[in-house]
Length: 84
Image 1 (cartoon, rainbow, N blue to C red):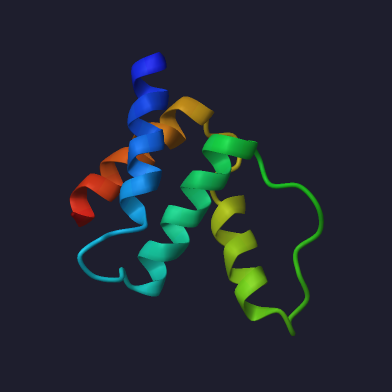
Image 2: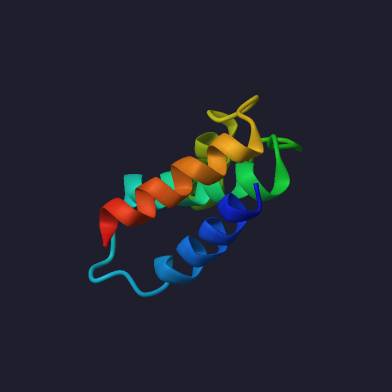
């Protein structure tokens, strides 16, 4: 568990210095996995149609509802590694 947390923290740091910016779908996946790993299931109402970015982020995070934090962390680490 401590190793996964350490790897996750390293992946978060690495995500800020990727060789090239990922496409929007990948960025949403990174965001959703990070939020699921650190905050758990999404809460609150879905943002309105005028907040398209907030709505896309909420939707991406909501798709991971019920996923365990550890598995979200591992997927995050794997995704960042694949982007290096």
